[in-house]
Image (cartoon, rainbow, N blue to C red; front, side, top):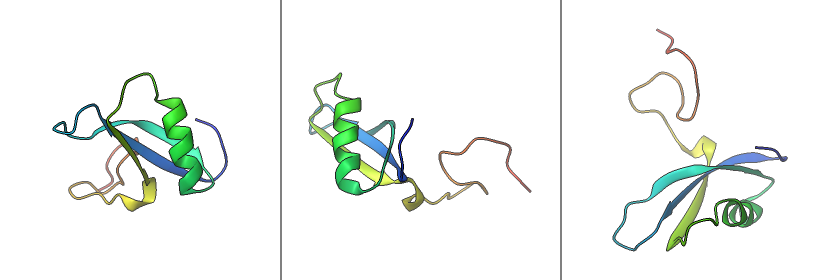
Length: 75
């Protein structure tokens, strides 16, 4: 993933009744461009709906490290 700005996590579903699934991430300077980058990057499927959220909007509930990070848990 390359680009300037924030990291946005991308979620999508193929049918209205489906649950959203995490399909990847894009880097963009703002939300508007994140939507464009997500649609262009993950357009291989016929998505019913796609959404993006800034990575920092997610908070870990049961782990000391943030979601979407790698590494060992610190205790």
